Length: 477
Image 1 (cartoon, rainbow, N blue to C red):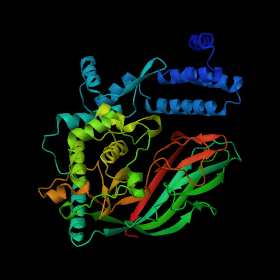
Image 2: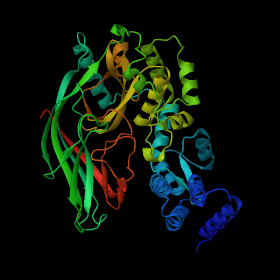
Image 3: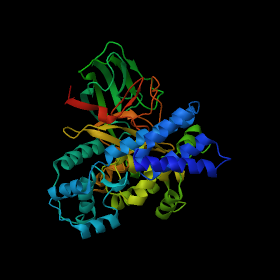
Image 4: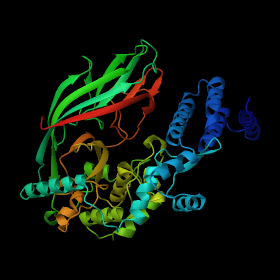
């Protein structure tokens, strides 16, 4: 037996002796939880085994312990680089590095690493994130060459603004055909067992997304989730075959439109604070939308109590542009409080920033909700999260906190994404942490969002390392 495992057994015995009034299963779970918090992940399977063997009726504790074990495995996948591997990737970017520079980066929280089973492990995207942070903090005033994607977005949004002069409705529709595929690795599920798969499907209850047409699917039997579900999906099943990947695919056609509400013509009425909409979208949704002291302090420092709702949102938005660079994110399932992470580390991806933005707005009594899916600009399709803000007398308007201010001297164009959105979106979700349809049995790979899909079998969840996904898009069809 390894010395670490022997040590764990000794700790269990000592804890039981010193906590005679504490139920043994709860004490054992606390030990497992402590090992998880300290990054001693190799001890967790042993402790989980002990919990299952000694207390088989403690299904709740066993389930929580099993979840912690799965999350620890996900963390190990995220933090997969040794220091030498991290340095090699940094050097590939032609960034000078030595021990002294590493210490400076650590002090600034520009690197991301953690101790796992006694070894220092870096986040798999730590090098590319460091490059982004250096560009944001050290080169933000440097003259930049025009980016073709930014220029295309600028021209597109100028068209949306022009088309929105006399309407608040969606404008500038774009037709697209989406082909989406999930490919499960061979032999991760025993032959003959049923693989359950949930794939993304466009919401059919939003004005910016219309003319949704099913074209084909890999199987004959599939189930669309109802519009009442937070996450929109299409569900399919397939039997596993030895030596072969399980392939799920779906094709669809739809039309997506942009929208812009000119702030100069936005005159919000007083909120009806007794309405169900107001109560729902100004409340906390722990753990990812909550009014922590950090959220309250930041929101109150940026906008006075009597600041109007749009100007409050604008002040929040401008603070993000000045202070929070976009960086690649850890898997959401491993993060207990994403807004707190953004505040502590002063960075985050689209979803992390959006959750902080929504938390700040709701705390200030401004209804805000999550929306997410994909951004589908030609050749730049990617997972993406954004938000919508409700203004009494106007309704819901889009607001994308991670899209930059645009390179324009025209304020309306420059600040487009505070109250506008482009036409290249695939909307899948109108909230976070919803149930899937049909119900998923095991712990989800992504418990808050739904963009890539989910896969499981009766023996457990299939995490992202067990399958991959692919999206292809044809425009104007």
